Image 1: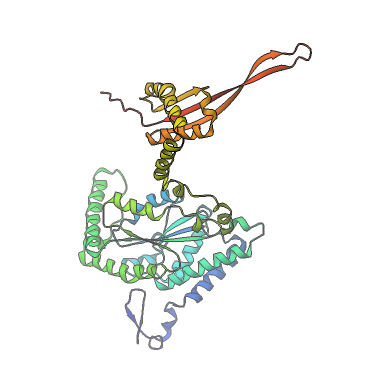
Image 2: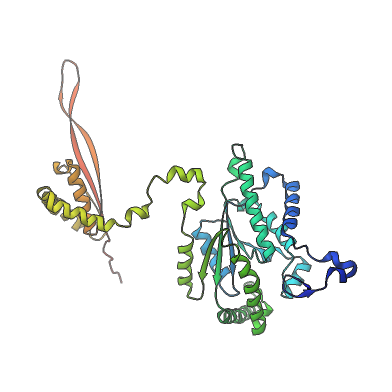
Length: 408
């Protein structure tokens, strides 16, 4: 059986290729990784191998919108550094020649240059990797890197370097469109780039955009999609059992795609926090857990007030109607009212709860704060001691959707 290169093209058997057989790329991921890792340790030092805490491996079909949605993903994950676009790292003349021919650069070169890039300080909190991994060898190197990151974290635990080796998290984001849509978008992009570049030539304003030969040739666009399905798609699919895999349907409109991205990248503390930190905070409920049945619980409480505490319930309603609502009505435009009251009805914790629940049921957001004021009442002329009484003032803040004035 004949060997194949990263594009699936047949190459000669090493025994048949004569003295040049050593030029064939080594395909053993462990050998490649060990070689790159040894070079990194020698150059930077083990204690300085600070890889990003969070990695988003971004893959997508040609035309799926990786570049368009990358800034949005950065915002969703609160990342401040730009993405690492692997194709832009591979800009040597030899690598550019391979890319122009529609082939992939060798795995060893890709892994080495990428790992070095990820060690730059700006990426320590996290980054997006656009275009990695694209082959099964790169997939294995990604797994090996992850395990090395865990080993480093364990090795430097309880040392002064501990904070530099945090719990790593890896997401896989796959933006998927079918072949027909991919070809359509590639050709459309090609036409738009040509129009833009012609306008730059004419006006001398702006910068030209990269024009891909495949964006003008339907067959070449189909080949790009085929390479994506057979290489990148399969490579990332093989990682879904190891890392957090997010399949994004990118066929729809931009708002639809972004809603899908937000849903997939929502904060999940159990995945992202250090296990010790998570164990400490998990006793506290999530906001989502509290509000999930809040309306049903509110209804139950109001019914209990009506049937088990009717007198107090109706006193609170009368108090709201007489003392609070007139002031709220005067603030209908702003949607914010502050009401101070000395009515002793609010001395009762149950009455306080009733007031807040009543406003919630009516669509308002109410908060109550007790403010105590010491009022001087008498003076002991012999000792000079001042005797005060405590004045209780309940400050109620009512928020609601105010009126929108039309101006024109």
